Image 1 (cartoon, rainbow, N blue to C red):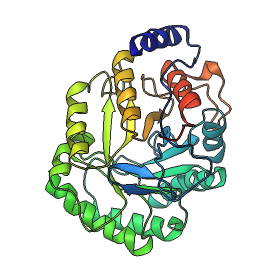
Image 2: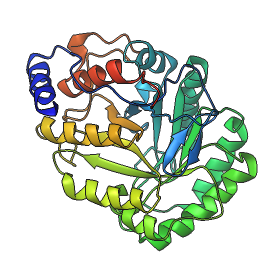
Image 3: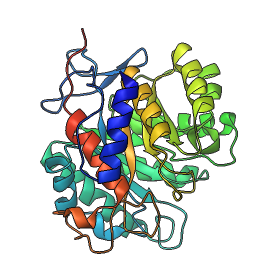
Image 4: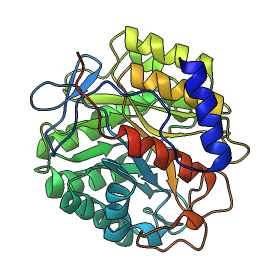
Length: 329
């Protein structure tokens, strides 16, 4: 069955038609916003039914601020069928949060408030590669105080730890989680792991304790990360660690190179079979494969086919079929 599906997908991609030839998902329909919680390794709604969020991450806000607006958020819901978006607030580069915090918060809030209005889930992503503990605590205190009453708000407290050990990431996470929970006792929090969110096996052996509604982020780029990383993720799941793919794409880890459709399909089937939420990277117009839009694309959505690169066309095709899912048997 999967072989025939894969052949059809190859034809879809070659022709850029945005077809509908991949397996039907097995999770509950998200008809309206519901508080989310974690039961075992599964994200569930207020009835306890499994939920899979599927959507798109915006690129770094400091380099692509033009897409951080209500029009782009609304378009991703209405035209792409995304039910979640991610505001990737750059922290360290020149002009990002450490240099310009007020403007950075303004960009993030534009996406968060648009998602609230559009009835979408939204991830507030501290898009950093290194620990900045006091700054992160201050930022998430503000976000949790302002948005903690909205059930669709999700906090990603450390995008991709690059060189920190798991113990350093865990200690950092515990302190940031504590700050968030003082203002928001129950919204979902996403915790990173070392080496660009690939060392989930280390988190599985020594997870954060004392808090509910935590999941751990797994990032992959399908042309680079293949079966070895899925086996590592399977180990984490078997140990009871709940996973959330807050960033993924089909090309090399550099964000460039050729799309590996076979590897992407293997990852897609793995996510669906394990009912794992995922967001594709990214809404931006850089000259690289993972950057979904051409410079011709409007800042505020309403993108035409000619504005979309091949990766965007593929992601849109998956989302339009799979964002509405059926309840598990």
